[in-house]
Amino acid sequence: MSQPTEREKMLRGELFHAFTPDLVAARAGCKYACNRFNNAGEVSRRRLVELWRDVVDDHSPLPPVQDDPVADEALFQHEPWIEPPIRVDYGFNVRLGEGVFVNFNCVFIDSCPITIGARTMFGPNVSLFAGTHPLDPALRNGTEGPEMGKPIDIGEDCWIGGNVIVLPGVKIGKGATIGAGSVVTKDVPAFHVAAGNPARVIRRIETSMTE
Image 1 (cartoon, rainbow, N blue to C red):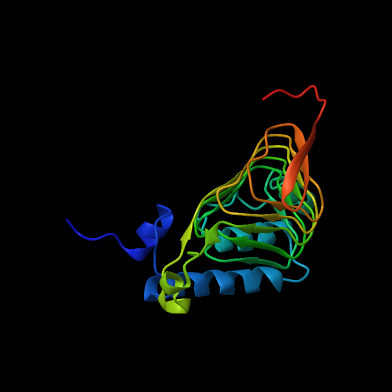
Image 2: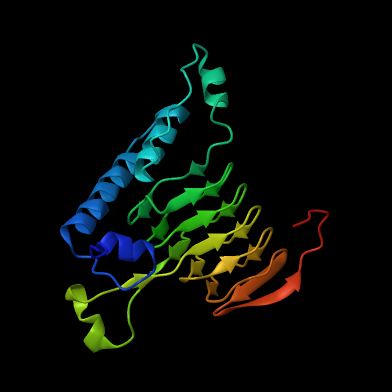
C-alpha cells in the first residue's frame, strides 16, 4: 500500500510537511489568484465571482451572460461577497455559503477545511487559522519540520466582528455573534454572543430563528 502524500496527510489533520513541491506550488497558485482578485479594480460582479472561484479552486460554470448588465449582476445575488484585499493559503479548503459577506483584510489559513454558512458576515481584519504547529520546538524544526491543522466550522447567520481571530478546531454555531477583537479558542453554541481574549460566552440571543 502506498504511503499517503503530504497533501493527503494535511487534509486528514495529521502532521505533514508544507514545504514540499506540491504544497509550495499550491500555495503559490492561490497567492497569484488572490493577487488577481485583489487587483481586479472596477470590474463587473460576474468577473469578481469568476476571480473568487479561481481563488477557491471552484470550476463550476458561470450562468450564461445576460445582455442587460443589471440582469446579469442579479444572477450573482446569492454568491458570496468578498471585499479585497484578502489572503488565502490554499483556497481549495475554503467553502462559503450563499450570501456570505467577508470584509477587507481577512486572512484564511486553510490547512484544513474552513466552512462558513450562508448569510454569515465578517467585519474587517478577521483571521481564520485552521493551521497550527507542534509545541515542541525540536519537532517543529522551522520550515523543515511538520505542521498540522484542524477544521474551522462557522454556521449560518453568524456575525463575526472586526479583528476577530478564530483558532484551529473551533466550531461556531448558527446565529452566533463574536465581539470585535475576540480570540476564539473554543466552540461557541448557536445563538449566543461570545467576546474577549480568550472569548467566552456572554449571553444567549433571543430570536425567532430555530436551529
